[in-house]
Amino acid sequence: MIAVIQGIFRFYMRQIVIGVSRWIEYDLRNDFFAHLERLSMNFFLNYKTGDIMSRATNDLNSVRMVVGPGIMYSITTITMFIFAISLMLSINVRLTIYAMIPFPMLTFLISRFGGMIHKRYEKIQAQFSSMSARIQENIAGIRVVKAYTREDSEIEEFKKQNKRYYEKSKSLIRVWSIFFPLMELMGGLGILVVLWYGGIQVISGRISIGDFVAFNGYILLLLWPMIALGWVISLFQRGAASMGRINKILDIKPEIADDENVMNINDIEGEIEFRNLTFSYNNIKEPVLKNINLRIEKGMTLAIVGPTGSGKTTLVNLIPRIIDAPEGTVFVDGIPVKKIPLRVLRSEIGYIPQDTFLFSDTIKENIIYGVNDVSDNEIIESAEISQILSDIEEFPEKFDTVLGERGVNLSGGQKQRLSIARAIIRKPKILILDDALSSVDTYTEEEILKRLKKFMKERTSIIVSHRISTVKDSDWIVVLDNGIIVEEGRHEELIEKDGMYASLYRKQLIVEELEKD
Image 1 (cartoon, rainbow, N blue to C red):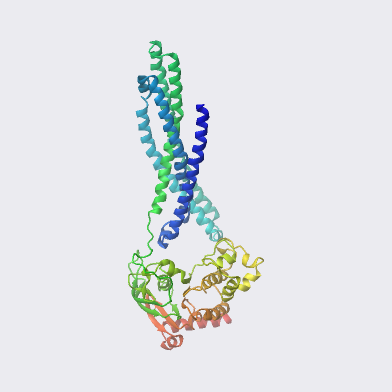
Image 2 (image 1 turned 180 degrees about the horizontal axis):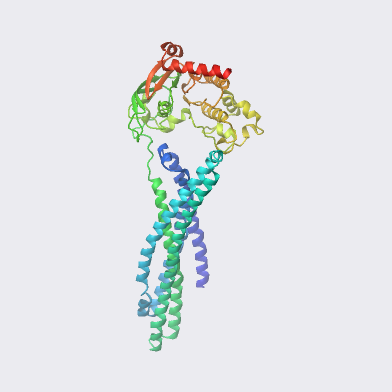
């Protein structure tokens, strides 16, 4: 009867506890991913992708093992221990006390080996993260690896990483190989003491043979819980090490978030202003932008040109708060950007960065990314404006063509045009093109700009480019050099000034003439 009841309880305990552990893992993984999505760009500059993935998979599995099997076997061990000790005390108190002699030693072993397991498992997980990061970087950069014939070198480096992981894992196994047998030995010592002292009690007639046999049966019930206790301790130490690594990420506060005094705004008009803006990155003392004063009216097209490293990208990144500007220096519709809800600000901005990223999904899904309820006509229109429609029509599956990782089956120009289509379909109040036409030829660039002109008519647009041909028709042109606005005006005015802009224009005209020849 007891065996039947035990079987029923074990079935439901496994069903409930292991089921709950899976739900906890599910919720924790969702929370972890949601937290990653809220973190600022600086976080991803400091943590490798492989390391983050290791925490989201391997470490989370270790935590699940604690809240599942760890808790389940803890309950079993404690219940069995209380049950067996109670029955043993009912037979003979003194014999029970003698049977418990090894337990102080057991406590010492748990304390000693628990810390060793924790430290060694932390090192294993750190090495696993490092190895995962190495694999991720190699797969992502496989073209570079092959172009520079570094396959053998990368294989050797991975072998070293894998060897370090193997050695660290082996160091933990050495601890286990001592810890588990010692736990079993403590149980065996308890049985040995009972056989010795209990035998004396039976010979002297203080207890009956039946009680002695029953007592031995109960102490044998303790043997498995004592062995299981070692495994449970190992699970808890591994789980604690993994939870510590996960918490290290969860405890990081997003650098860019809604201000406490954020205003109740649901949309923006598109006017942008920079007032006395001087900006420098945390690890750079020299300002990247110096005393920038600039006003971009709603519906205006502003162009920003200048040499590499002059601060063009930094300036436009301050508008959607990809990086945060000093207080009271960047305004949208006359409101400090920090007082506009991030969700509202970014949803009204179509931003095409220098480095285009496409998801491993269909062309259609890449275009409509971030928008809902769009018609097929709107998708076709955005593709037409960005001059990618004819290319899409050549694919066998057209808009349903699945792209490879990072759009590997597209050219650089096609990726940029697809990114432009993605920004256009949002119909944003502010459109930012950060060198978004650098990979397309001049003819395609002219066609895109011609169609964009109509689209940008009612929108505030900012075009960052090295090409004068891209920006010459803009309403206002700003020339940045070393973080300072050195020139500004219309194309004709800047040519007449014969400054940096005019010099860039002449050089590019010469290059175009040489290319024609």
